[in-house]
Length: 471
Image (tube, rainbow, N blue to C red):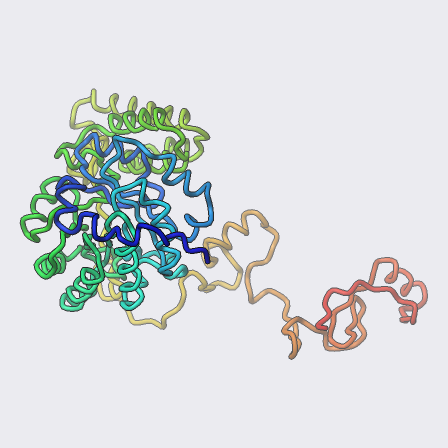
């Protein structure tokens, strides 16, 4: 692999700002931070967030290996997004190879103010790719990656982590990263397993313990839905700044401490998108879905229209219709407004609160009977293959192929070959096929007719179509 860092960057660690100096001078003492979000913290969204109080933004998480080998990926995700109003900016990478990470960081360092190593992504794709929080236990590797980055880069190296269940281990982890050369640490107060329906509450106690143990700036991440949460988090943990991800997506004015009508934020975002092309339609659509999340639960027809929009103009038209419907509802008496459990009317920017996970041992508030564990998806309680007993995937297939049999009990059974596992027949001669060795061979229509005319006998001149040959 080509090493592209054998030059004056070797001495960069002696000249670049470090720790609190870096936070105060380069990052301008940023307290309000927009998180790195895959396909969501793109330039247009960062500029919108900065207009409304954000003081520091991160790029979406970028794959170091792809960034190194693909010039188009570099242009689309960083180089083309260079904007003087988009600073300070930290570029985040996921990586598990020190050499690849350094190469990617060197290619990015002139376009940002720091390089961040993602050690917090808990998704399945990160597990398969072996990055993010799934490097949490590989301290030797992480130490090597951070040390190399601190030595070779002209900008500081930072990290974003998740906590261990044990506070003591989390503190030890943070101190190891600091010693290796990390100049700023973002601590997401959730563990590796706290995601999706099991997201739960982030532990500010872990964050506070880390802040008290290290001598570098610390940002807190988790439980941030309103500006009051930001202020309370800083008071309780002593951190230098607070990072918001989902709270920011539902209300980009969160750091201003206000909750504007959704259409105001949506219109402003679409305006920024038009001014700073190109912006992927999938990003735009996803942002509008997030902003209008609560209203789209009510106006399902427009949810479908938004999903089918083929360009930004189509997204803007759905936004216009949603605005119009909400303004009509606003004109009515308050008693006629759609009733929800939300703290504000559904057309106001506000956080989405995930429902707590259901207790697997209870059903409708009562203790469920202990039953043998079975996969609900694959359960086939009825022998008729009805839709109720099929998985969602098979139900979709049944709609496309209504005459196909999806019930295992009704499917014909074949004897499997001991060598290859494919079906074989019980006899060497059959009306429709015969076995040579253990391969299946099917008669042609012409051969069937010939056999019928000659009494069904087989001849040496028979021609067949081989379907399976284990050799």
